[in-house]
Amino acid sequence: MGLTSKKVLVLAVLFAVLLFVATVWLWPRLARRSWPSVSGRVGILLVTQAAIFACVGLAANQAFGFYASWADLFGQETDQGVVVDHAASGSTGPLRVVGTQQVQLAGGSRPQLTGQIQKVDVVGRTSHIASPAFIYLPPEYFQPQYRTRTFPAAVVLTGYPGTAQALISKLNYPRTAQQLAKEGRMQPMILVMLRPTVAPPRDTECVDIPGGPQTEKFFGRDLPDAVGAHYRVDRKPGGWGVIGDSTGGYCALKIAMHYPAVYGAGVGLSPYYKAPIDPTTGDLFQGDKNLKNRADLGWSIKHLPAPDTSLLVTSSRQGESNYKSTLKFIDAVKATNKTRISSIILGSGGHNFNTWKREIPASLQWISARLAER
Image 1: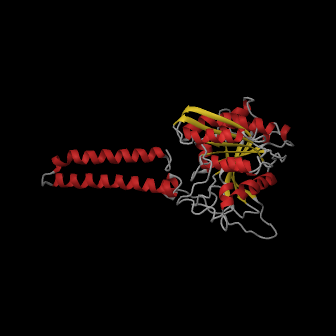
Image 2: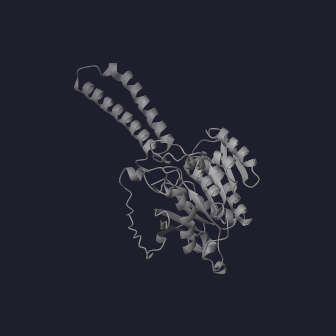
């Protein structure tokens, strides 16, 4: 379980409560003036206080995003920062490969059989945002008979704060895509995996903040341009897809709606439909009412021209807080004459990795089918 998982916080609180009950229960037995009794009282108080401190720390970390993973907390993140020179002449490319890893599947680990994951650094030419990402290249990308073929691409986003590695190790996007393509249930696709937190620790909600990070512009323009300049990506209008969970789901829907000429399909797994304002985001709109309205997807679909794109939203009748707002959004999109809407509604499922893993295979097939229609 990850550091930012709600399950970890719940377990920590439960452990602290049990220690408190144990302290009250054992205190009469430790009331003697002997050294063992005194040591027992000191020990149980220290352990209880440490448990309470851990609960407060986990809650604060979830609220403010100080650390994204256990490795980050314990100083085990060793990847070095990369200096990017933003020279006017553009001497450094918008994308640079800094490492590779294989997709571990039965039957071998050669790229021609299982594909390859490349770790890259992306520099936004217009947004001036630099962000790491992982690129999954399907096996066909390396096979001689496909050497002149271009491939559809999909941006895959985490929630906030999230780690891009979790898209590979926890949500299994590359393995799922490889298996679905092997079974003929989707076309081979390039996946561009990263987190929406491109200006950490701030949660920008994929908004172009006045005087701040131009996050939407990075995802809507710079990222497709950078990837397209380096890989054999399909460049036809609407030839990209975008999928994300939670915050990433909100971003995916918004990016597809605002950049339909690039993104022909957008999937929100457990999304919400307007940007929150809290301590992690700060003031996103700087008093700009038009910008705030534009970031509200429900308002946008009713008051702005309907985008020519396809959207997929997911929720569950029990366990997800976005169920009613999802139904409302579906009805609003259905009332347009241009935007297409689909949904996955589970009977039950919480806001967690297990739920999203149940929705990802069908979502990838849906993206593949929509991009094939372009």
